[in-house]
Image (cartoon, rainbow, N blue to C red; front, side, top):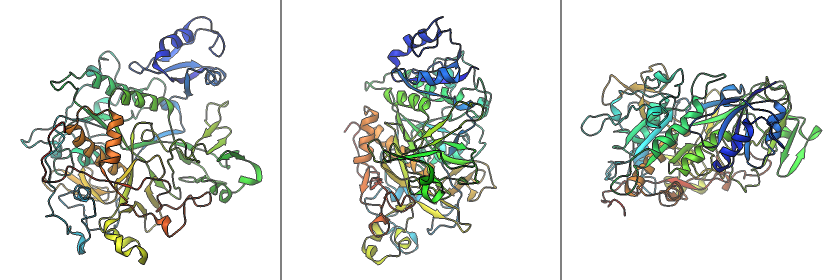
Length: 565
């Protein structure tokens, strides 16, 4: 029986020859010996094509040296989902409220040391104002998210003109004849507050760093699932093609493009058993070695929701080869990509580690894995983080919390340092529900992720909403999540791109992680408590291999910067 599989190639140079071999009447080696039907050509993609294949043919193609991966397409995989990286607002130990007229992170990140050490949460460093000369002028920011409140006043420039550019992405990308997703018309109506909040923290007139950047909105996923729905894949290629179609300016460069992705992909498994096997640091364990959840947890196997014997809906971060290929091609085209590392849920530490880390190849194996695909199994590398932020070349952002950080620790040995430190965002509510930042060596830097105030959609029922400070017809919100940390980095990146429009994504990532950080700003609970080891993956307030780098905006001063310097 033939099914749809998306085949991802390692190099675009092989695409024409590979496609010819797949669609001709005969094939050799692992190429099917028949004419293979094309389920979706995925116009605009350089390396992805969806073919109609049997399970056996799909498995065989993974052995072709030109092939990066063969996957069930996202719209057809009932185990693969996307998730916004926001968490519910709660009772935080800080003074920011949903009615504040500023985003405290602008001020917090504009000083090497924490300016919020005075009683009551008021800054005792500087004059309490956010000074700036750079504002993102000349830079394009794309918010890849759920939906946007198009009319919100936060998008206005100093003259009251909206900076939100409502373009037809297909026309601008040169794909005018391609069908739009069925929910395409709703992208500028705010169906939830997430995209509006994220955009405001990157470039809002009052809440963001890049106060004069032009910005664009792209829905990160079509809500329609099933055969023939490929809006999720088109997303990344439309942005790349649009960027490539920008004119070269008088300075010799296209307008820089920065894309913010405050969401992750994750897998769910409807299983009642523990894994068939776990491979941990090169050794595979089966049988009595992993016959209880406690034994599995010693290897870092922790379900994010449910799971364990008798459980269901086991949830893990997912790396999606086909989507990461399109994101990698975006980066190769010169587009800067910033993503939230992900939020922990339930009891999971949710590590995201880089290649070369001893835990990078940790995996578990389930048989069977995907309903409707009886011959498939699942080998999941559970410490590799999640797409899109973990994509090589993207800037992966973790979250820290608190403006009066010293209140949180409670151990005397750090008393003289408390005023300058942030802590890993880690919250346990009154109901015992835990949420916090993803940790690990793949993270590039941290930014504020707790009790951050920004613009919101018209929803008045969610916790933390209040009338927008500058126009009561609209809303603003206080909330938390690595969704909020990422756009703060995006905003600073826009300032850097305004100053240096020639920067490549690699240069931007280096700049952000070297010039735009205040090092040794995050307390590592592992210094006095448990350390990161094979028996302690749940230490959520230790760095756990993460870099000790906190976002610093070097442009938030009264100094005047010269463009191109």
